[in-house]
Image (cartoon, rainbow, N blue to C red; front, side, top):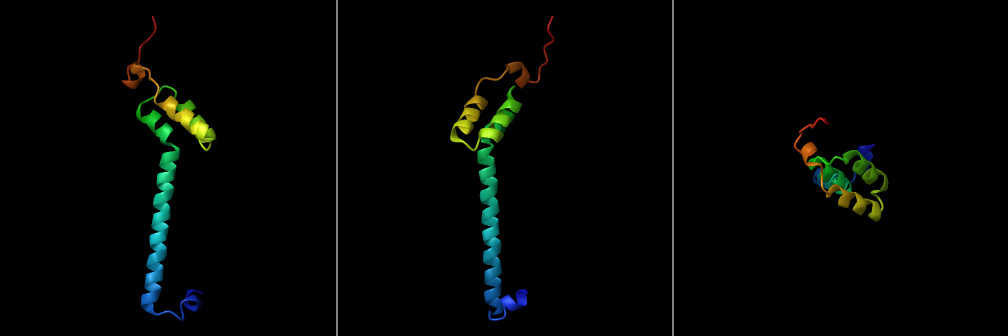
Length: 95
C-alpha cells in the first residue's frame, strides 16, 4: 500500500514526509501531555500539598473541571489551608 502512495516520490521526498509526520506526532503528544497536566493542575497541587480533601478535589476536578467554574473551584480549594498534622504525617490519637 505504501509503495503505491510513494511511487511518484524520490527517496528524499519520502524521508522528508516521514520525518514531518513523526514531528507532527511528537508535537501532538507534547500538546496532549501539557493539556492533561493543566486540566488536572488543581488535583496535582492538592496531592503535592497533601491536602486532607484530596479525593474530593480530584472528583470535582475530574467531573466538573471541563467547566471554568468547576476548575476554578477545584483550584481555589486545592490552595486552601491543610491540616498541618496530616501534612507532616503525624497521627494524633484522641484522648
